[in-house]
Image (cartoon, rainbow, N blue to C red; front, side, top):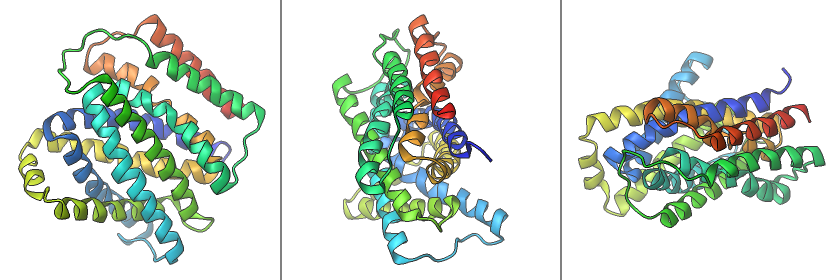
Amino acid sequence: MPFIGEIAALGTACCWSMGSMFFDAAGRRLGALTVNKIRIPLAVVFLAAALWVTTGRPLPPAMELDNLFWLSLSGLVGLVLGDACFFTSLVILGPRRATLLMSAAPVFTSLLAWPLLGDTLGPLTLFGMAVAISGIAWVSVEKRAKSPVQRPGSLWNGALWGLGGAAGQAAGLVLAKLGMGNEVTALTATFYRMAAATVLIWLFTILLGGLPQTIHSLRNRRGIIFAAGGAFIGPFLGVWLSLVAISHTETGIAATIMAAVPVMVIPLEVIVYHERPSPRGLLGALVTIAGVAILFLR
């Protein structure tokens, strides 16, 4: 099937845009770090169910230690550290501004993929990436109307956390591709990434004495429901599709298409927060779509 990597990357952006709305609601009720601790184990359950349906057993086959090392490191960097930064930014800035900062992820990804994976990008591909990122950046600097949702922290603080999330996502993708090689499927790689991240994040929680506070936060049932919905859409479907994407196209191209999340959040914010997009926001969306189209037609 042609363009399967690009289509999967676009599906990833759709899932992550919807997931960010769920995680925003969950983070304001449970706390950003707590959301990160529970969404990953929930995703492991969903992945086990998917494996059961597709292979007849809930656990993936064993793999080489080298692959396991890179996938585990990918889970730590991308899902534990990177997403913790992103969720902190999400609570401070809101879904659209936080996801807009993730537009830096393709730049980080391309810089890392060049020496580590040997990915080379042609002039038309670089042009398409530049157009897409320009559209996202155009929307990101737009002044927004006051939101009815009260958010803690300063814009600069939220921006730093957001850039940390972008760097973590980029490193996680590159490390995941190293771990997948040519023999590990996207579903299997996603399961191992999530499983490793689950063990690591809860180990850190116990060692740092954060278990009682985390358990206390889980009493908010509404927050748990939002976190579960986000876990299904984001870490399960979204991350699975992201690994399908990087296994069928260049990592930098996949990351650029995935970075369209902020544009896809616009209609969701209209529905959830009743915030109308400005002409500037719509123009930025069109520019981003044009950039993604160039990547498909390159």
